[in-house]
Structure formats: C-alpha cells, structure tokens
Length: 597
Image (cartoon, rainbow, N blue to C red):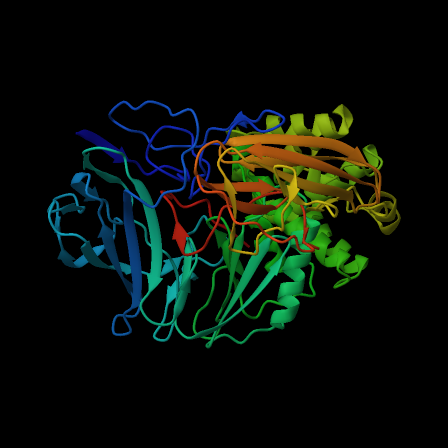
C-alpha cells in the first residue's frame, strides 16, 4: 500500500500520477527512436510520498485506473448569486482511502459516500462508488481595489436568468492506494442549458456557433440575454485572422468565446481570459476599433510563460498592441486611428510609469504605455533585422522559456534576435519614467511595409503518408491509421514561406515523449519538404503531432487490411500544438493567471 497526495500546483498533469515523463492526456505507446533519433521530453508530474521509479518511455493509451471527478453545475434561481456544484467521484478499485479538498467558501448541502471532516474537506467511506458531494458556492466575483475596473463591479456573476462563472474545482486530493497509481480525469457538466470550458462556464439559454481554422476550433456562445454588437461571422473572421497572423508558438485545439450579457450586470472589465483558452467579452464590444477586445483576449490564449514581477508588463502590453496592429492590418481601422490609440501611452500619469515596476502603474499604464513600448520594440526589431524578425519572434522565444521569465531573460532573447543595440534600447524603454513618442506613417511603412517571414505547413503533395514504403491515405478526422507492429510510418510535410522576407523556421515532430525538430531557412515563396520516419515496436495507440496537425496511429499484432490510396489535398496551417479541450481537463490543479482589459 502506498500513500499519495495530489497537491494544488500550477502544473498540468496530463497522464498518471507516476513521476515518469508523460506526453498528453491520452499518452501514446513507446515507439522506437525516430529517424533522426528523438529525445525524450519530461512533463510535469505530481509529487508522491512513496518512491516510484521513472519509466524510460511512454505507455499505450489507456482508460484503466482512472479517478474520474465530474463536477455538475446547476443554477439556483431562488438564491441569486450562488450556484450548486455536485462532484461525482468514480473511484478505481486500488483506492482504500480518498480525501477531497473543497473550495474554501463551499457550503456542503448533501453527501453520499463522503463524510465531512473538521477542516472542511470530505472523506470517502471506502465503500460507496460512485461517491458524491453537493455544495453551494458564491458565483459572484467582484473587482478588488487592486484590479482593473470599478471596485465592486463584476468579473463573474450569477443573475436570476443566467450565470457566467468560474468553474469551481476540487483542490488537494489525497488517499491510500494498493497497486498502480491512478490517472485523474476532471470533467465539467451542466444540469440544464449551458456550456463549460476548462475554466469558464455559462449557465442559461444560448446559441452556439463554431468555426475551425488554422488547427483551432473556435466556439462562440451567444446567450439569449446578450445583444451582440458585432456579427458572429465578423467575430470569427477577426479572431481566425489573428490565429493565422500570430506566429508565436503553440495554438490551443479549442477556443471558447462567450459574449457576456450587458443589460443586467455592470462589468468591471471589457473581457477576461483565463485557463488555457477560455474567455468572455462584453457582448456590446465592437470590432472596428484599435481596442478590439475579441482579438485582445484571443492574444492572451497564445501567451504561455510564467512572468516574474519585472516582466509582467508584457502580458497586457502585447495583447493591447497586437489587438491594435492586427485590426490595422485587417483594414478595420486606418493608421491615424491606430497611431492615436498607441499615443495614449505618452500621456500622464501612465507615461511616467516604469514598466518593470508594477507598483508605479497608474491609469492602466501596463496597457497604455506598455502597448506603445511593445509596438516601438516591434518596429525596432524589424528595422534592425531588415524585416527578418519581429516582436512575434521574441514572443515565440519567451513562450518556449523554461521557468520564471525575468526582464533579463527578455533582454537576452532580444539581443540574440535583433542585436545588443536593440536589447539596450528595450531595457532603457522599460526602466525609464519617460516614453518615446509614437512613430509616424513614414516610419511605419519603412518598418512594417515588408511582411516578416511566416511559414505554413502542409502534408507533402506527392506522398504525404506511407507505411513500409507503400503509400497510404491520410485517416479521416477522428479516425486512426492502423498498422502492424514493427511497421514504419513515414510522414511528409512541406514548408512554405508565405511571408515577405527570408527567415528561419522550426518544424517539430512529436510522438509521445519523443520529439525531433527540423530547421531551415527559406526565401519568400520558397518551399521545402521534410520526411519523418517512425517505427512502432509495441502494440498500442499513438499520437503523431507534426506541423500543427496530428495523426492517430494504432499498432496491432494483426496487420491491417489493404487500403486503396486516395487523393489527399489536406493542408495544415502553422506550427504548434495546443492542449485540448474545454469540457475535459486531465489532472489540472490550478487556475492560470487571469488576464483582462
């Protein structure tokens, strides 16, 4: 018997509680080394009180030994301001004890198979399965004095007719087990009409629209109570254009966008993004403005770093700047309006704020002065590199940064990308109590007239997929490619520079914990093709991720039946793979930092 504890940590645990490396919510089986040889990538894991032994490679996908926690949310119209959450625990057989930590303000109203403890948690009776606990929780979250917006107005709210809420989460999980360590799967369900992401839920009547672009599925939720200012088609166009334009690293598979009703609630902010890819935006927000909040909140979903205090300014500064720039590039505003918007950073008191010192920020200085500083940095990088790099290049670097990101780290990336001179200028701009004036139209054309290098990836036109040298059709969406054990799958990917200048690209190829990356340099319009070969020696299910798309492979002892080749015109856009998906989060134990404007 072993004793274990799943602590509340800011990590995403994607598979079992073992300390072995894991790759995804459904972890692929162990392949042999790719050609060229892949290197294992360790992922975060839970801390265990008992010792375990690292496994050398990932294991096949499995649904066994799951501790499944399903939180079902329900409205309480007779108690406006609260919602009810019922946690159902499906407990695998190796558990002998289990304790769940409830949110601090949870008011338990019913249990079955659980009993309350003195510290407010619940303990399993070691017999009932499934076991449930139902509690009420305050759904209203108001803006505090140190947060953007009017103190006392709402960031999340429950009304008599609808609820826009943060999803409450069981925190610390501890217990005793016999045998294998379990996987932890968390789900959110809605009792009645509503929709749940991984961090935000809407409860009430609504309409839903979806659109898929650039490897992402965008879901727009329009509550019945919302009066939407922009057309859904225009919202999709705006955010999917931003998805294509931003080449800053991984994209999430799913993006949940909720139009927040404005009639019954005074919102503290214009929008909030939290978790990996959930956000809400006031329904009355327009698109044809440099302060395009639909794009602003989407940009936050593409930020993936842990900023130290002196680098925190980057988060809102770049979201504000990119919202304005991408709206300009989409011809929704002219340069004069773009210029006036960024020039707000020249005004007091925000102009005197020091970007690396949050204690000096007044009047949304990290948004206003920060956007101007970020934009000027973008311009300087483009000029210094003759358009071969941009702010995108820096953000892509910091998104790949391991550990806490400091101002010194940012300066180092700028130095490597654009040179010491630009790095020194950036340091001066972020530590000064002054700010350079907004640049003019001539300077803008000189810096931004040549589009930076951008790369699109598609399956090779001739033979996108082969098994043991024989051409195979790509599997349809949601289907697996079935191969025999010891067969080799070869995937061909074509890279094209669709930008305006010569630049360097990185093309990652992942199979479970194994990753290899091809790099190269292409002129505008130039293409090249890479092939990745992977032999599967063990039966099981595997996920191959390459160039922003994935292929599911099942290796079996029984060879698959012959398949007729078909024409495959499939094209995939841009590098990067996101963490899935809205309603199911596997072992997620902490909220990401919420961002808002």
